[in-house]
Figure 1 (tube, rainbow, N blue to C red):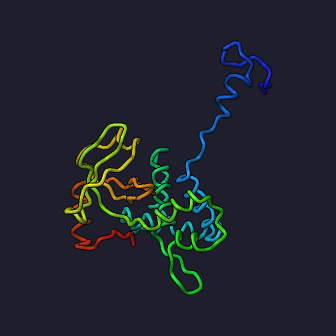
Figure 2 (tube, rainbow, N blue to C red):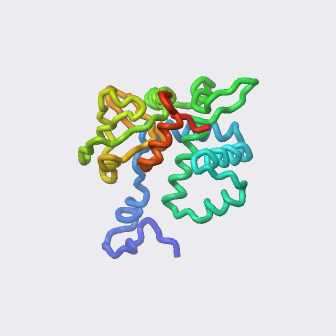
Figure 3 (cartoon, one colour):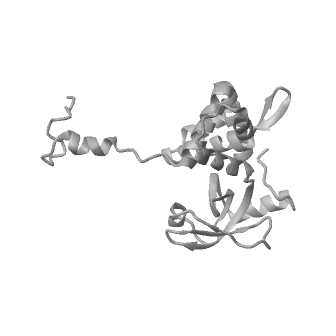
Length: 226
């Protein structure tokens, strides 16, 4: 049965539905500039790539990240067995890959999706959203170790590709609730408004996995998927 706006709220509070649970259900937190910028860029790019190409890119991402090379059956089984959190994490990685890593052929040239979107001229962004995307485009994927955690403030990260560089402080409140010293991350570090923050997908790595990456990449200053 549909509940009317002026009916008693079914929660039993004694208040009208419109002044109780309906108001809470309708309240949506405003979208941050970072989330809005990534969403707009992703939607813009997806409309131009099409579902078939996005499927190919998703397979490419999984091949590179998990070293799966057994075709779509393995991919399908892997995706089917994911729980909701793992599925959301995978999708975040795919979105980041398609936007910031994968190369797209356009008129004979190869370019990243984020560069394509930023230079197209028809991506509807507010100035803060464009500033965020430009910072994301300029931030390479690198390997970081958590050196110190300041609860409800942020993280001190060491760049493992350039360990002699100063350890930056990264303003990431949510990350402080799960990160511990020694954790190694593949991530992009953005400089915005004089502060550092993580941008795009974040890839937690084992120490053994990080050592293997360092061995494979040698002295390169940027990690590349593919």
